[in-house]
Structures are given as structure tokens and as C-alpha cells.
Amino acid sequence: MSALRLPYVYRVPLCVPFWNWRTYAALARCIGRGEIVGGSDVQRLEQRLAALFSTASSVACNSGRAALELALRANGVGAGDEVVVPTFCCASIISPILALGAMPVLCDVGEHLTLTPATIEAAVTSRTRGVVVAHLFGNPAPIDTIEEFCRRRGLILIDDAAQALGAKLNGRLLGTFGDAGIVSFGSGKVCFGVGGGVLVSRQGAVMERARAARFPRAEAAPTLKRAAGVTVWRRWRHWSLPLQIVLSRIGKPAQGASYQGRAMANLDAAVASSLLDTLDDNLAARRARVDAYRTLLGQGPGCSLLPHGEGSACLAQLVSFSGGEQVALAVVRALREAGYEVDRSYQPLHLQAAYDKYARGALPNADRLWPALVELPCEPTVRMEDAKRIAEVVRTTGHAG
Ligand SMILES: Cc1ncc(COP(=O)(O)O)c(C=O)c1O
Image 1 (cartoon, protein in one colour):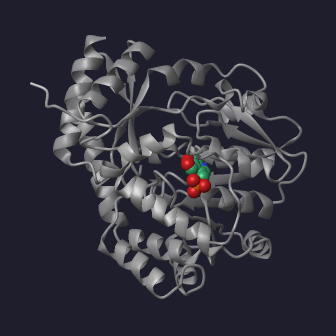
Image 2 (cartoon, helix red, strand yellow):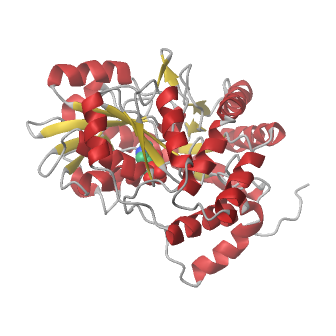
Image 3 (cartoon, rainbow, N blue to C red):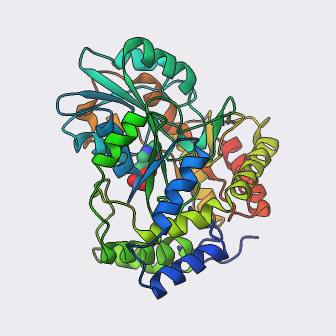
């Protein structure tokens, strides 16, 4: 018997950040003391991340996109250069490249939906200057072999661990491969704070250039507005989503992939620090949810789970349906009707009108793989009983297809 449910009131809304009491204390302290932009939290966060990534220093910015722009700039990427990026990714990866006057080149992905040396090879030309490797869903791409490939070909490699804070490949933290790495505290990430991104590099010269090219100081009003927005619309999404739907119908502008690079604000850093305090619990909870999906769905007919590598941060669990797009759509519908706000995965960038000009030819793997995908939530805010119920709905609906 299905319970009566109000529209847009989900038992488990999409991507609710995992905050702790220190997060609210950090917000209250920074606002109460007027330390929105200035304060000692940015320096403390930079030191903390430098220690985590075993680098001499780090540079904190107001978004992962800004950190990516700085990483590329500090490695000498500029006008006319080509930078290879995965087509199966969020659009955020494009704007930092364009901001430098460089040209993104969309590249196909392998069976596990990440770049591989073979897919990169097909996208490289004499103008290629660098490659940005993203570890989507917290799952490590084969960046060790890509690092070797880039070294051989003289290409700059940026290790984009925006979605993979705390994940490791062969015991080595993602973000530390290649010439520079970034992490993000933005929307939907492992440590989803009120925004911010950090650049790390083990190369002293890169960090020196990054510090010299630092963005201007953050601004208080946009920082406060963003923090209030994340708290109300994301952290309290369970209650605020219906209102957000109403506002969107009366013309509230959608958030785009554009950004304005700034240094990280003190408020962002204080919140990010509070989330680092619970990073181990956060990762353990995510991995437990992936294990539960694997146990409950791993052997089932009709669907297959994207395997997470051993050190994955398990941001989300991708499931692919052998019945294709129609089944994936039916699963999303069934889960939403059951009170779980889930979505399909990324539509490859080369299939979107705004980005198709950055593709050079056919990208068949991404074309073939994406329509059948659905993302299952792994946030610690999703209770284990709900993960089990989600698996049950997926099994029944995915199977039926
Ligand atoms: C792979 C990847 N890189 C970079 C970014 C940009 O991070 P931010 O949202 O903090 O700007 C994102 C954000 O979604 C991302 O998924």
C-alpha cells in the first residue's frame, strides 16, 4: 500500500549535505563576529589541506572552478592552447578553460566512464597543452597510467578531485597526481559545504605562480547569500523544495556553470574545516551504502553497478539498465514516487547544444553508455533502511524492463 505523498516532499531529497554541529557553530561564529571574508580560517584550512596532501602549501579559492582556472594558469595554459576534458562530466569543467582563452576538447570515456590513455590519445593534437582528469562519483580514474602517458607526451596533467576528496588510488590521494590537483567544497561534493575549492601541487614553482596569480579578495554579500542559499535550499531541502519549485516557476534564474574567481572567504573555510573533521565517518558511511547496493543489486538481472575502485570516495552509485533509457526513466519515476529524489546521470557535454562545438568527432562510448544510467544516492544523510528500500525499488522496476 503506497502512502499519500505531497508533491515535491521527498522522504530523501537529492544531495543533502552531511553537516555536523561544528558546521553550524562555524556559521554562527563567523556571522556573529563579522568574519565573513577576513579571519584566520582560510589560512588554517590551507595548512590543513597542505598537510593532508603532503604539499608545502595550498591555495583556497571561492569555487572548484576558480581553483581549476588557477591550476591551469599556474601551469602556463593560455590563449590558443587545447585542453582535453571528458565529455561525460559536469559543465563546470569547461568555463575555467575558456576563462584562459584556451580551448576545451571533449574526449570519449572508457567503459568505467572515465578518461583512459587510449581515449585521450584519440583527442590529442599538436596544439594540446594539457589534460584534466576528473574522478566522477568519487571513483578513481586510471590516473597513474594517464600520468605516465602525459609525461611521455609532454602534456600538463591536472588531477581534478573535486568529487573525490579523500579518495585514493593505490594508496595515493587523488589530487596529488600530475602537475596540480583540485578539490571542491561545492554543491554535491563529498564535503558539501557552502562553497570553495582548493588547489594543491607538490611542485614549488607551480604553487609560487598560483600564489602570484591569486584571485582578488572575496566579497561579503555574495558569500553570505550563497551560504544562506545552501543552508535553506540544500541542507533543509526536505522542507524547502516545494517553495523552491514555486519560485522557479515564477522566474528564479537557474544556476549556470559560470563563476567569478575570488579568494576563499573566511566563512567558506570555517565550514569546510568543520567537514574535514568528519571526513573519515563521511567516507565510511558512503562506502557502506555502496556495499549495501552491491549486496542487494549486484547479482540481479537487468542492471549492473559501476564498480568503485578500492579507494573510492563513493560519492554516488551509478547503475546501468540493460533495458536502456526507457527502463532508466521508469526507475527514476518509481523512485520519486516512493519518495526518493534521484536523477539520471550526466548527459555527455558533446550532446548538449552549448558544448557540442568542443567535440571533434564521434564519442561512441559516452553515446552508448549514458542513456541507461541512474545515480543512486550514497550521502551519509541517506539512512541505511532507505538505501535498502531504494535497492528494492530499483530491483523491481529495473527488472521489469
Ligand atoms: C569534476 C568537477 N570539477 C570541477 C567542479 C567545479 O567545482 P565547483 O562547483 O566547486 O566550482 C565540479 C563541480 O561540480 C566537478 O564535478
